[in-house]
Image (tube, rainbow, N blue to C red):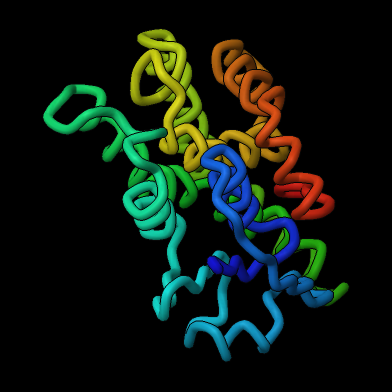
Amino acid sequence: MLTVHHLNNSRSQRVLWLLEELGVPYEIVRYQRQPDMRAPKELRAIHPLGKSPVITDNGNTIAESGAIIEYIVATYGNGRLIPPPNTPERLRFTYWLHYAEGSAMSPLLLKLLFTLMPKRAPALLRPLVRKVSNQALTALVNPQLKQHMDYWEGELGKSEWFAGNEFTAADIQMSFPLEAAQARGGLEQGHPRAMAFLERIHARPAYARALEKGGPYQVGR
């Protein structure tokens, strides 16, 4: 049976959601973040990088969200949650599947990093670290993040879902950047289509079932 090595409050929540959408049987092995928010060392026994998500299935160990989604859809999807080949929608599907981690997450991770740095700096250095972090956020990170959020807003004006008018696994992949942007990027300010996208995915029964099985889920807080 397919096994999801599930780290709490992580991208692996998307894998559970995808499996629930497809009705694929699976089991969960749970891992809890350490106090510093890192994954526990036990995950290294599954994959050398010790990160989540990771799945094991039929002798295969697969990491990286996009690769996992491609594998599950190809192995168990039977044509579901993916547009037909050689269509504009399929090209958009492939783009968003890779864009989510390749481009969208970079400014969100920088936002998290520069927000946390002053809080974790030694007391004597905290004012300096806060000044540097605020300058980086103002000059670099926040403008980049806004550019991405405006891009999502424009693309969701072209169709209801990221790859077209049908819900696909690309929307599952894109859920994490949008949830993170809502949590720490100000997505709710001037991006009604992106916020409506989040409302639609959160209303899906499979999303709710994945939350029940995956446990508490708070992105970016």
